[in-house]
Image (tube, rainbow, N blue to C red; front, side, top):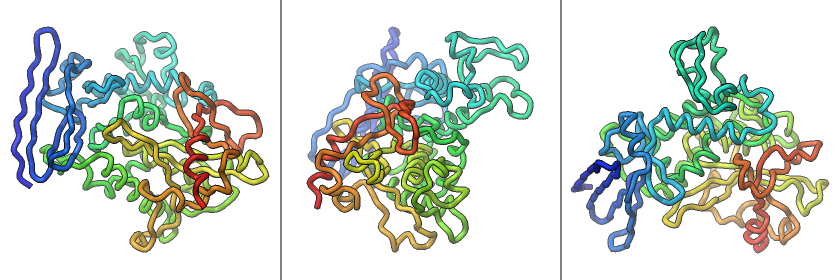
Length: 415
């Protein structure tokens, strides 16, 4: 498809930045608003403006080219809370991600914060800390990026790896620029979902999916085919739910479902090592895999059908999908057991499926009595906690969101 375009950029002396970009193509009109692309049929109306880039000065200081309108190896493009677009250098983004993780750290992780990779001295005092034995100043968890690493990698931790791949996903995958900054921070950056054992799974999952998602990566010349981020995320989610289980499973033996495994086997690396898990472990693994490639995801579930623990519990996954009005959470179930070569034979669950087609989304399981929650990471503003059916105490360490009204409204009508 042939395209013609015009790009202009200017920086006023007061720091205000004005960007304009027009790309015309038939039969579609592509309107690029700094960080993401909306695709609308010809004749449909869509307007977007970038009156001010709040982090323009930071972007310039970090060497970001003023003509760039998407995330790359030097900077992140963000959609802020007011809907405006801002740029942030990778170093600043990493520091702010670290601060977010630290400010909302779960109680399970506080005693092992240093082992995870948090620099408590710098974070607790909120000032740069001079580290004479390794040289240089640092304000974030990124001790691995100091002038010299400590012996045997003792200055590293899984938080560092998580941050690295959270930023790498921004660099590689175009859909990440359609995700609001607040959503990306809470549902991509965290290294854990609930109270599962903390492991360095982000590296493994990112690498396992990289070849499968190669065609979706940004092209070096910026000429990748524009696609509606909503459609792209839906396509990628189904692909991951189809391929994940064989990619990280054993040869000819994909990850499979096996009941009664939580809390024995429910962190991603344990699920991969054993080759099976119950619904909670499978949900945690799928959430972690989606996050590894920059797709916001969280676990949802009920601790007890009809409020009765003896009737059992269930866990599944919600994915944030951006759209013209902002975005929404859509749910699906992990579809384990798909072996390599059988992808075309099995229709993995996806975000476009009729909710009533899922076995648990039925009126006899909902209808007002079943409570459903979704996991969160932010402490502030979390209206609830996530009740973990496998916990023997009233554990309120995982922030949550009550989704009962949504699911009882949707699934309560299904037969």
